[in-house]
Each structure stands twice: as structure tokens, then as C-alpha cells.
Image (cartoon, rainbow, N blue to C red; front, side, top):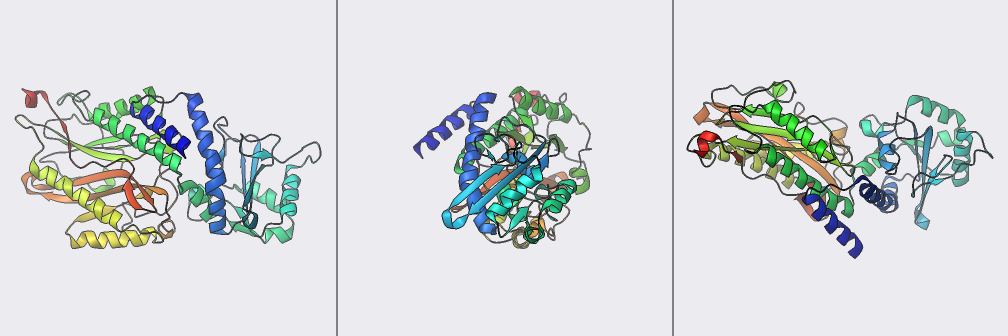
Length: 443
């Protein structure tokens, strides 16, 4: 545990200083985390879901989204046809990690195929199944979760044709197991996550500052492309194209269809503007997703108008309502319903569209609303909340602002962790509008 703590401290110090790790160092950390997940997370999930054999099948460049997260750092893709077999014996507390492949898959998964003795890959897989005689064979097909639906028709048909009938009857969907694997975080991952969210916040803070923005000159597209280039220059990636938009006095509030599109165009940033960004990055196989807001100071101003900060506080209030309704075992739809009812009681015009976050940006787990499905989301919204999971606490509240003779929309998104001790933000949240000075405000 001390070693893990010291590694975490090193990661936190290194990343918080924006010294992104070199590829070789990243590789070591990724593989260490992967080993922990195979040996600690996977057995627990197989027991929880009652699946004693999990088989994942992919071909190069058409990878199952779950299998992709299991590849070692030096494997950027599957090779030929890659078949993974995880066999769990709960009563012995053992888990086998096998590959029906010519070689080991990194340090964690051992090759279990001698092609010289058995040239047929499918028959080699069947021999493994017969020898272990599992009660349930989990395969990645799912109606509700695209991430858990990675088994393609050709592979399924060929596997099923090769499999004896008695074992065909034991095939079950591995949906819950696949989702559990994708959504569950370890302590070491959360140490990394805290630093990653800090980097995300730091980039937004630099973007929404006088270092970049010159009111009357800089456009929203200038800020967007600066953010993308910044991430590239730091040696990381964005998992979606950022957006920056403006709300200002005397301009009508756009509807949500327009607000959630990427067709808002480029606008010159002016004093008095209320800015909003949506931005997320990928590093060490984890993803962030963050929305924050800033105000451009006008001549004579040293702070945002009180009516705008008070409106912003309504966004924080909605966050508080949502996270107060998190409870292990509740579905995403139940959490959504309770939160919206409470928001209505407090006279908030709320919209909640919170999603799982982790190995993918729009990840697998309980969906807590979508911006256009505030009555609940069939399927993914019925999935229940488990501990050691991360969410993008994404929402907005529409606030009437008499001073502008219009409503404004406070749109926020922050990474939050749900664990045995309850909810916490992965690395704080925005509580006040960021302030961007302009020349006329500085003079």
C-alpha cells in the first residue's frame, strides 16, 4: 500500500506540474493498473454477475470496445483474430487469463494455443471450454450498451457453429460483466484521475483568461482550436472536439437543440459576455468531461454582476440536489426522477443529463437522463448505481435574468466519484464565474 501511495504522489506531483509522462513511463503505469484490474476487479465482477467463463473475440481493426481496454500498452490493436478467455473458480478463488493466440498478450494473459498441435483456433477454444466445463459462458452482446455489444456476427456465427450444443445452451449475455469492467475504478486509477481533472481545469482556466482572450478580437473558434492544440502540444488527446459559446444581453437564449449542436458558428468575444465551454481530454486511458463558465469584465467592473453570479449559484444548487440522490442500488432513472422532482420544488428549471465517465468519455453504466429524455432513458437508465464508479455530473438550469430581459442557461459538468463513503468530486468543482479582464476594464 505504501508503494501505491508513493507512486500516486509521484503521479500527482508530475502531472499537476504539467509534465506529462513519456510514453515508456505511461506504458509501465498502464500495465500495472491493468494487472490490478485483472487480479482484483475482474474476479469480483465475475462473482457478482455469476459468469464463470467470459470469452471475448475480436479481429484486428474491428476490436470489441471492452477487449480494447484489456490490451497491454504495447498493443495498439488486436492481432489477427484475438480470443481472450477468463475462467473464474470462486470456490478456489482463482482466475485464469488465457489467450487462444500464438503468443502471450502482455504480462497478464497467457497463450493457451499451440497451433502445431491444434491448427484450428476454434477447436483450441472448444478444448479449453470442455476442459473447464463452465456453467455460464458470457459473450459480449447487449441490447442496451453499445460498449458491451462488441461481438460481431461473423465471429459469433463461427464460434457457435464450432461449439457443441450442450455448451451453446450455456451462452448468456455478459452485459452486466462488461459494463462492470468498464465502469469500476481502482484506487490507483483514482489517483491518476484527480490529476487528470486538475489538468483539464488548468487548461480551461488558461483558455478563459487574458493570456488568450482579447475582447473585440478573439473569437470562440480561436479558443476552441487553442484548447485542442494545447492538448496536442502537451502530448495528450481530446476525445471530442471542444466547444465554446456565448450568452449576452439582448440576444435571445437559443433552444436546447441548437445549444447541444456544434453549429453555433464563430463569434467575436466582447466585454459583458457570459462564456461557456465543453472540453475533455484522454490520458493514461482515462477521460475527462468538463463544462465551466466565465464572464468578460466590462469597463469599471472588477467582478461579475451579482445577478449573474447568483444565477451561477443555481447551477451549483442543482448539482447538490443531484448528488444528494445518489444511492447504491438505485437506477439512473430513479435518481433522475427524484432529482428533477426536488429541483421543481425549489423552483429550478432543470435539465439533467449525467453519464458514466472513465475508460470512455460517454462510458457504460447508469445513464441519469439525456438532454432530450428527461422522463428517463429506457435500458441504460435502468442500470443500477454501483460503488467505485465515476460520472460526468452534467446538467443545466435555466434562470430568468430581469437585468437582461431574458433567461440564461447555466451549464456545468464535473467529474464525480461514487464510493463506499458516498459522493465526492474527483478534483473540486467550479463555484464562481471565472473573470476575464479586457483592456477597457483594466484602464
